[in-house]
Image (cartoon, rainbow, N blue to C red; front, side, top):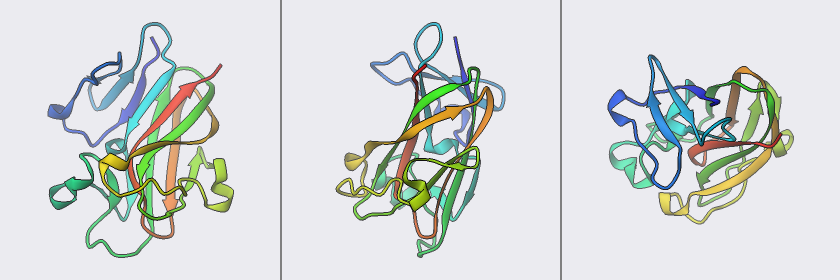
Length: 178
């Protein structure tokens, strides 16, 4: 089966199994392996907690847990400032993938999204993730289509950036289309 290696900030005791799907977090040496289904995986989940480089961002904790566990958001002191996060996603198969981001936003916070340094979706207008979902909490998380993107075999760098603070990001999702 195809596996996806995701560098992660998730501690070893936080490995979980998603009910109702064949998707599971699997412990490996220094990375988390995520695979779904039997044979070649067609869906990839990258939790927000798997970001490897960031600017002005943090994972929800303490008082910000109201937004949901493992949500990527503006870091303390919670002032208006640039936010950025990068994810390293290694895949076994080069292919075209439909790309979604799950997030919550009570106000528009358009975000630039890049795959391997190339802006995708409405990123040329800095307008990806521009939709309001209803609130900041987990109950308003929506999975929103970004674009169809090419992921190369090996490491792919996914970068989200904004001149202001992010929407509350829960995860990145990819579905192989070819």
